[in-house]
Image (tube, rainbow over all chains, first blue to last red; front, side, top):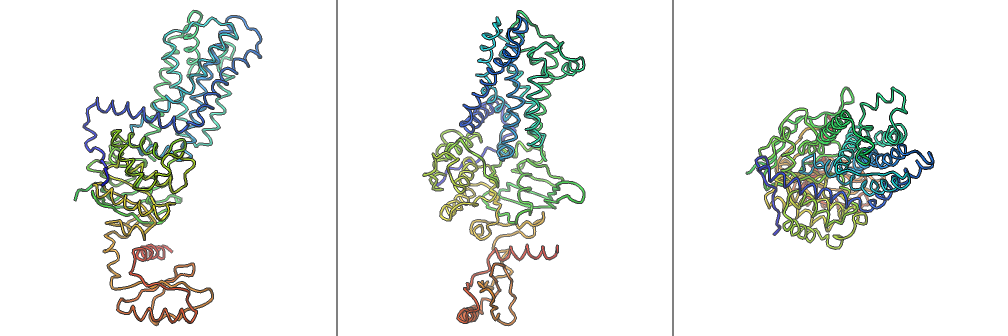
Length: 264
Length: 313
């Protein structure tokens, strides 16, 4: 009568290649699930990202008028960085909090999917949403501030690391804090990232204590990486920044992963 | 028979100090392949806590859970590969249609595309979901959403299928279809753990039952075993009239079920006398309606739970 096929039993002994192929397929399906579920709000989210990114450039222009070459470069590269970080630190926690509140996160967690794949799928979706805004922000910045940007090949992996780190921090934050607290935190972070982080201006404009603080946070290295990736003739990334960013990336991914694995 | 789920002496407490809640206090439970086991109990009895520990969303304080030979507490990933769960809360699937949601979940569960598609069509037809299969989820009723959630669980069933209140909000016609699909899951070889309040309907489908109350299994057995103590007895249900007192037959124990309903137990040999009495009372305008029925599982369940509550009080 019916054609039920029971799930395979001996799952632990499956060869690595099979498990990798399964994981690859499952990630694709989870991405499909998330994209289709947010199909209605997706165009709006992308639009908001584009507006945010381009409007930041326009707003910076109003604030500073016609800056010199170096300041122009800071602003032109800073705006897309802000847009990229905002997706991870602000939109990811909001989405995770929402899915916790509506109960879909708990259901997803009952699926036979390795916990890390949820993270990979979500991060892919959020990176895709951020991408158009990022590209248009870069173009807008180059035009408005007459910045001679020369994107390098490693800008792509660098942007992925920035996106991964900020989204994983946002994910971990949303998983560990109560939904309302997480939403509030994400609002506060927008201001910190936009105004009180050396992303669109040089760090030496900040007081010493703030400079020292940012030396240990991932935000300044994120900005340095994107800046140097976009304008390699004018900027380089200090080795220390790569290490700080790398450690944060690793810690955030491990934190988000263990938050997903947590059993009450 | 092939044992799939084996729970032993499971304890789980939430919180600390005086406000702590002992949700599971030494639960034992077995579900074999091909069996539908009903887990009965009212809200807060510890049913969902038990389910969440089986699939590794909660960690037990003590006790063991074995799922097809796998230690589910030590290896929750393996447990999830062996089980499929329909949660008590509906899964939000806005943006998807029922058909798309069922197919996607089937493939996420590792089913082959062609198999999943065929099985999805089978379930849509069997549950009479056809008219709604391609409707965006935000436009379907609660009952259709519930059936979709069932199909998402049954599309690629695990060795263990856990269904938490699957019939909630489902209309009576589709509810029958749903019960036969639940039975079919077990007949195809799955072990089905059915969590429900709906004692009356579950009675016809389950092979075995466990009554959970305040974190412990009060009684377990087949429906026949649980009602055995009352075999040879019938249940006389009476709808009362506000302000009127029926003249109950001498020596009968009357249980007030609330909402103007009362029941009493009658030896089967005296069924005719009971009907005579009820008919007379109805003619005299002291009762509204009556019904004589075999002692049901619901009666046993209500008595079991009521007894412990009296003890607690």
